[in-house]
Image (tube, one colour):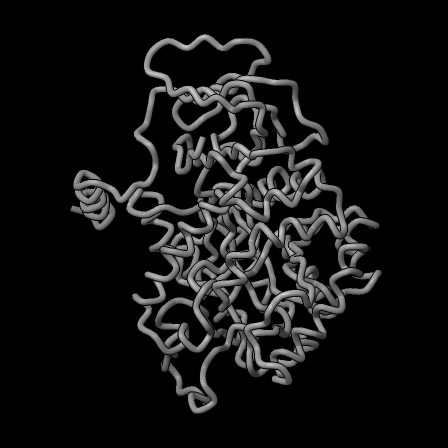
Length: 444
């Protein structure tokens, strides 16, 4: 028996034994009645409507009655808002809720237990999909997909790829200089891989693709959470980043990079990347270049209005404050030049930051209208997920409420197009949460 067939048999046996579902028992169809629809693209709600879900797809939408035969679950929407499930374009589920020192020193199985809870909590906040940009998340994704635990759909990057002393180099100072063939805890756990030549970057990229990466994450510049690199430094050469881009392109997918500064972003664009994550310190000329090249800008609403996981006065905290200064200007440039912009939270090492996912989305009203914010977190983020092409782990239309789309849906108590703050309190305001046609929460 092949390894793949053996794994399939084991997975089937596990599922036959009973999955740990919180979802309601499946019906042949679920009918939402008397709902007003935000379709993911428009700026107003529909008239009172009905939406039929059959299997994991939206099959009918009508402002009149939908007649259904057979076993159907009817949900009276009571005039509330039905909208697509939310999408977070920048997550690290394995590292979201534990302090950094705990991630670096605990057994990876403990980290996985914490990540399993974090995934369930994320789904209960209405985030039904997540682009995970660094961490050993493949097993968690498989468990969610099998129904062994609850959580969002995950587009995994696997291990972050970093140069020595780069943003993904979390080795201790006493582990440097590294001996040839000696791997750190983070590398052995497949959390972050250090590679220092085009050939090494190509190999590490291919390894993540072999393990199931839907996109590749390369560290192209300095960062806040890392200990060796100032935030202003550029990392990797163009040939090194291009090696990752070529390997990913051969698999039909793309590379996104962590970068803040003009030099780091320009090198990445020259190498052929399709997405920049962060970029709070960019200048006008680089923003124009991103618009011309149709590069995605995955921005996060980072401002100094919540507790930092870094001590005051520490090097990490000073880097964080420097980055925060650029957030307003970054969003202004993204709007000015019409850059394709994604919403993400990048919650790291803080249970409170992870829990504030909806609060961060609501904060986007600082720069955008509620309709623009919700479109970004549904329809637009779904377009970014689709860049994975044939490596997309969940083929189908997401981020919209329309016939033929995957049934990831939220029923909201109120009109989020008028009160975006509703998304900041999902426990109260999200009455129904559905993912892939299954109801995971129903408090009506």
